[in-house]
Every structure is written in structure tokens, then in C-alpha cells.
Image 1 (cartoon, one colour):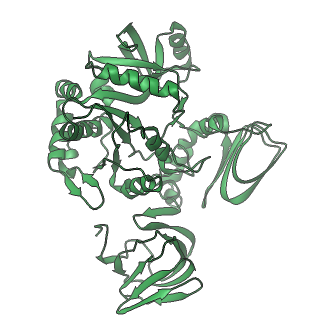
Image 2: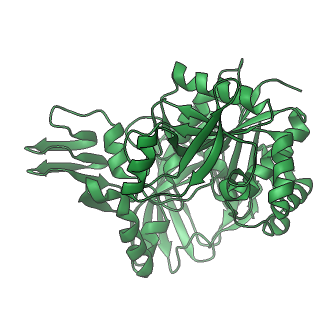
Image 3: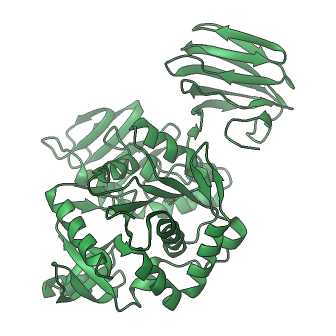
Length: 477
């Protein structure tokens, strides 16, 4: 048993509100926007005070498991567990499964803090004072929400009304209010009793499970059973909930399932800097501005323009006589829109998804991460495509073959140990190798630096499902 807080970071969302950088396969928590670290990595760093926290538990899904592990490894941060949701069932089932795990591993008196992985937070003294206040309140049996003191009558957030003050500085919750219109939001703020619902919580696990049993019995029943049937991967620290059982959980948020029904809800009014970074306008507000109010990240030249956001990693953007715009450039798409209406980018993403020709732009990111590294699609044509492949030191791809394509590998950085059928050879920079159709092959990085190569594929079919894995270090079929 430990008196430390067990942090639970929710990292399974697949939002596209920051398209074209965020996609279904690469959501915003794993993307680098204005800084070198991702939002997920910043969330990890906020819970690194070992006097206050245990190692974190990450809740994510199968698709992002290697992204989570790699981004934690980049920061040399140890994780307590990576708990994999086999299907999306909203926050209540995920939190319920985490509570069952924590009670078993840390004891019935454990306190868990639920954090989003995609929020921007200034982790200063004010932040940690709120954390400690919430933890003390949770240890008294309360289920605590973090309420952000509102700076404007925002209509994109839910609100929490505070009632009587509790010992320690928290307050009892009177009610939760769904996203209001601007007029009602203004009225609520003027009362001084309402805060934004941040989606962050502090829960004592045993009372939380009891409240789930009372108000959402199907959630805790199936979440507990799914955990009892988990499959552990000790080599990779993944804990997989049973898919068939977990799928029986109702699709419901923790707010609806418990917080709006329990009499034990409390709220800590929090004045630390916070944003859910749900739009390009929010990214602009959070960024460092030049004298004309522009936020520039990457390659750009700006002339006679103001109050705009420009992000471009590769192509050079020239902006002239432009005001209040978002210009976002990814490897394969460009978004230009008004900053004020950028929260509606979902409308254009919906249109992209509806067209067979553009559907992949909303779903797939040009750079795909794998447990061994990843690849970026450079160019694709009829019967050929080129990729940039990067392999981390000491990692290797699966032993595999293809039925429909041949490959040419050109080493541009590092060294590669290449297996082609019965031949194994070591290649250095500027050397290349040809892999015929049907040949058994493997790529390994035996060096101390990243291996980078250009892969040219040629053939009648170039899909990723034309891979027959014969051996794999990561348990993939």
C-alpha cells in the first residue's frame, strides 16, 4: 500500500480537430506542434515528482501502444503499466478497469488521478497545490473534479456548479451543466459559483468502485471481468483487456455514469493555466507571438500579416497581407482557414471522409510509427512508391516476405544488417540491396544511431497487407 497518487493518463482518443497534423491514426496527444515535446510527453512530465506520484498508468488502445511506449522511452520515463482498451467505450469503462487494476496493485486505499494526455497545463505551484487539495479531499471519500476558473463565457466546455465548502478547500458539487450557449455561460460566470469541467479527476478507488456498482453496474461488472481475463505481454509491458467482455460495457462517460449521479462529488476550483487545445485558435493563443501577433513554427516568411498561425515542418510558406488566419502544412495536405472559425475544422474533415478520393487524408498520417521505428511515405504512383524508413538502434523489423512487390533499399544514414533468404550482409551509407518478390528478408539496426534508408517498392500491389510475417519481436501476425 502507498500513500502516493497513482496517475492514470488517458491517451486513447482519435480526434481530428487539429487536422491536417492530427489524424485518426496520429491524434493530437502524440503530435509536436510548437515545441519539441508532444502533449502526451508533457503529461508524463507533470507526474514525475516521485514524492507525490507512483509511476503512471497509461490507458490507450491497440493502435497507439507503440507510440506510447516510444514517447515514454524518449524521455526515459518508467511506466507502471500500459492498459490497452480493445474497443472504444468512452471514459467510464476505461477508468473502471484502471480502478480495478489499481486496487489490486496498490491496495484498497489508493487514490488515482485521471489526466487527459492532450491538454496544455502550466505545472506550477498553483497546479500542484490544487493536486494536493484534491488528493486530501479524495482521501475523505469524495470523487473530485478539477474545475477551471473561467476566463470567458466559453461554449465549448461543460460547467460545474460549486456548493458548500468542504474541509480542505474543495466544495460540494451542486450540478454539472452541459455545454451552454453564450448567454447562459455568461450568466453562470457572473454568479461566481461555476467553473469549467476540465475532464480531470481525483478518485479514491474503493469509493469509486462502490459508486460504479450503484450507478453503473454494467460498466464495473464487465470492466472487472475484462480485467480478470487480461493478457499480459511482460516483454513490452502491455496489459490487454479481454476484447469480447470489454465490448459489453456501455459506451458512457464517467460524468454521465457517476459524477452527475453521486452525492459524493466534489470540485476543486483551479486557477492554473489550462487549455484543451481543441482548435487552431487555441494553439495560436497558447503560442509565443511576434510583434504583429503571429505565431510561426517551422519554415515561413511573413510580410504585412498579423494575428495568424503558421506551422510548416518541410515546405516553406510565404504569407503576405493576411490577417487572423491559420495556415497549417503537413507532408500531404494544407489547411487555410479563419482562426476564429478553426474550431469547425471537423466540418471539412467530415467532407474529406465522405469522398473516396480524400478519405485517407482524414484517417492516415504520412508518417507511421512502428515498435522498431517507422516510415514516411514520400511519393506514390502506379506500380511504385518511395518511403523513408527509420529504425531505432538495436531494433529489427519482422522476418517477412511479399507476394506482389519487390523492394530496393538505399542506406542514407547508419548501418544495416540485411537478411535476404540465406544471405546476411552488413550495409553502410550509400550502399543498397535488392529484395526480389517472394524473398524472405529482414532489416536490423545493429548500430548505436538511428538507421535511415530510402525504400523503393515496385509491383502490381503495394498495400501494407501484403506482408507475410514469419518471425516478429513484437508479437504481430
